[in-house]
Amino acid sequence: MYMQVKDLSIKYGTKMILKQIQMNLQKGEVASIIGPNGAGKTTLLKSMASIITVERARIWIKDRDIRSYSANELAKTLGYVPQHTAFGYPLTVLETVLLGRKPYMQWNVTAHDLEVAGAIMERLQLAEMAQRYMDELSGGERQKVLIARALAQEPEILLLDEPTSALDIRHQLEVLELVRQLALQQQVLVVLIMHDLELAARYSDRVFLLQQGQIYASGRPEEVFTSANMEQVYGVKVEIGQGSSGLKLTATLPESR
Ligand SMILES: Nc1ncnc2c1ncn2[C@@H]1O[C@H](COP(=O)(O)OP(=O)(O)OP(=O)(O)O)[C@@H](O)[C@H]1O
Image (cartoon, rainbow, N blue to C red; front, side, top):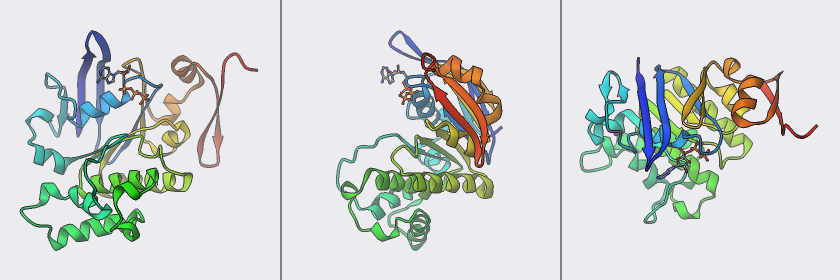
């Protein structure tokens, strides 16, 4: 097993936020975490990224407790893109992407670092804005730069918290196609938090449905996206059909007819 979450529980004050989470994740798969607002998705992803430190050996990467990784080792292994990032000082797009190379650098940016950053920026169509400042970008452009920074780390695990939330439909598909390719071609493990259930179904090999800090269901998209699960967890009526590009979910409030 490549990455494991073993019996993870997390409390804020007296409130249990995560309860006995178990996940076994393989190399090369795209896994989505879904669930209603406040279910604990971000808390789970932050624990997996070691942003939240857990007290016991609950998160394992390649059979090693995540707490035994040095910061540098972890940055080469795992890239994490949060939902929101605050920038303390002005950086250009290129400088931001190059920050992703930091775990590999000695003193200076090498030609190879520039090459890696350049290739990723080309792939995400950011090359033309390389010299622009982050605070001059649109929300979607900024989101793509942060994904590019994580990719520049050349991580084996990519954890993305709602990576497509600020993107228009074309850029959503581009980013999701890109992560699927990374999983398929470079065997990267990708874990996404997604609110768009149809996109989650389409791009994930596996889905973890969270409800009030617990995994309510997990499995292949067609196993998890059932009317019963959706109604139970989201409190909506969902008709599930087969569209041309995957599952089609039509949700209605239970009281509406
Ligand atoms: N630092 C914190 N201190 C106390 N409570 C917190 C903290 N961070 C999150 N919570 C609470 O933990 C619960 C889970 O939050 P989390 O952000 O993990 O949910 P989520 O599933 O990602 O939600 P969303 O879909 O709205 O982003 C929420 O009730 C939230 O209010």
